[in-house]
Length: 348
Ligand SMILES: Nc1ncnc2c1ncn2[C@@H]1O[C@H](COP(=O)(O)OP(=O)(O)OP(=O)(O)O)[C@@H](O)[C@H]1O
Image (cartoon, rainbow, N blue to C red; front, side, top):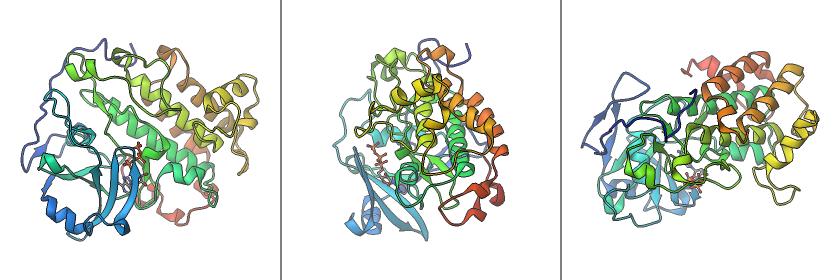
C-alpha cells in the first residue's frame, strides 16, 4: 500500500507529556526542538493585555495576537473555549497543537516556540508570519501572484504536508486550507494550525474516537467515520487548495453555480476545457505542459477513490518539476521577489 490508512497501521506509542524546559526529539531534524515555557502574565503584558491593536486575526477557536518577546516577533494564540476535562482527550485544540508541534519542526511549518504551563490559561507561542495567509493572497482584489509564485506556494505547502505524512508516526493535519497556509517574511508558504492534527497510530483511543472534522469545501467526502481517516484525506484537501490556486476561486463560493470548486472544475477538466479553470485575472501559463499538468495533479488529488490519489511525495516531485519550467519573474503583485527561497538558501 502506497499510503497510510489509520486502519492498517500498527501501533506506535508516543509520550503525551510536556516535560518542563523540554528538548523534544524532532522527527524531521536531528537537533532537539527547544520549546520554552512562558508565564501567562508575561504574555499578557507582551500583548498589551490582549488588546485589539495587537490582534492579528480570529479563528473559530480563538484569537491570535502579535507580541515582541526578547526582541523577537511572535504570534500568541489564545483559545476562546474552556478546556475539556476528559483525561483521554487533549484538553483543547491548543493542547493538541502543542503535542503535535513539540515533536516536529521544519522551515515549511509555522513552528511552536513555547506555551504557558498553566492549563487553565493555556496560550501558545508560534513563529510570527508577517505576510498574511495564502487565502488573503489568492482572494484579495489588489494583488494577484503569477504562475511562478503560485506553483512555489503550492510546492511549499505540498512539502509541508509530506513532512507530516513522512513523520514517524505519521501526522495527518485534517484542516488543509488556504487560511491555514501562512506566508513568512521571505514570502514562502508555511503550514500552520495543528489544532485538528492527529498522529496516526491505530490503537490510540483518541484516534478511534475522534469524529471526522475539517473545513467545509476542503473535506474528503470519503472521511465519514474515524477509521476512514488516512493521509489521503489531506491529499484530497490539498487538491482543493491546488484548484483554488489555479482558479482563484474559493473552495465554496455561493455566488457561483455550482458553489463547490470541485463540482465546478472537475467536469470542465474532464471535457478538456482547461483554460476555463484558470484564474481569469492573470494570463494563462505560457508553457502548455505546466497548463495541463497543474490541473491534472489537482484532479488526481481529488479522485473519489482514495487508493488512486497520489501520495504527497509524488505531488512534491511533480510540482518541483513544474516549478523549474516557470521562472519567478512571472511574479505579479507582491514586492521583494529577490527574497525568494532559492536566493536566501532556506532549506526546503
Ligand atoms: N503565526 C501567525 N502569524 C501571523 N498571523 C497569524 C498567525 N497565526 C494566525 N494568524 C492570523 O490569525 C488568523 C486566525 O488564525 P487561526 O489559526 O486562529 O484561525 P483560522 O485558521 O483563520 O480559522 P479556523 O480556526 O477557523 O480554522 C489567521 O487568519 C491569520 O490572519
